[in-house]
Length: 343
Image 1 (spheres, rainbow, N blue to C red):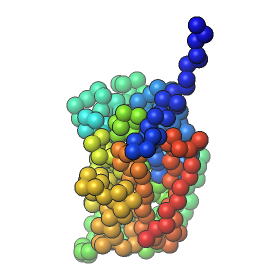
Image 2 (image 1 turned 135 degrees about the vertical axis):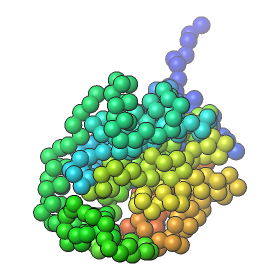
Image 3 (image 1 turned 120 degrees about the vertical axis):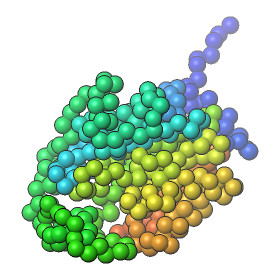
Image 4 (image 1 turned 180 degrees about the vertical axis):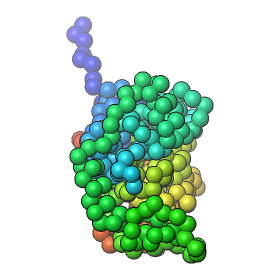
């Protein structure tokens, strides 16, 4: 009897398109980082797990230095050094691996996965995180490039403007450090004298829901441009940068991490979906909580549930009236860019 050729793995996904069935698998990520979406989707087509897909998707962005806000070679801190933050979360087991202020290691998302799979911890930071990575076999490399050195030199020429200091002497709006505590501490919210480029806060945030509805979320970033050395943003913080629960879905955030991490928007969005709220509404409600206190903050969030429904929301500020994100699922022949109007 003549044997039929094996069908490609993609066709295995097609039964999930039947009416009433979940539209899975799904890859969704922040910003129009198509190469990351492609890498994650191809990992699934090759038989990889949702964990593999998130790692490969974020790794591609790290290698491509997406927007200069992910990976090595950009966004130097006050000393001129580029450091990385990343996180990965397994929604089946609720395990998390994360790194913050990672030095000398380019593969931040892979180190985060190593933290999850080879330690009982959740988050490693700074020089100790780098030493752990080297012990795990990751090569130590210089994260500095001509681009990051030029950015740092130009910042110094502009008297270290803009920066993230407050209540210090000399006046941080006019001078570089070293800084000492000011004689008075002004309470209340800090308002930057000069609005920073909104792209200085970009993060690759990715949610992958596999064919069996396993939910995995991950993030990777080089953090805020000209940050204070040692600063860790929202990206490696579970519930802030991203969150995953295979009983519900996942969420991932991007934007002003110092503000957003105070509200755990990714956790909130997943909990709202747990109550039955659709992904778009959950995203918007999570941002509304922040907007109530910081109406001018820069931020966006993507959400997806285990049926394959997805959505996004963004806070409308000068320079950001729409937010772009990428989606790939069995309905799309290739990753497609979606946009949502900010509110």
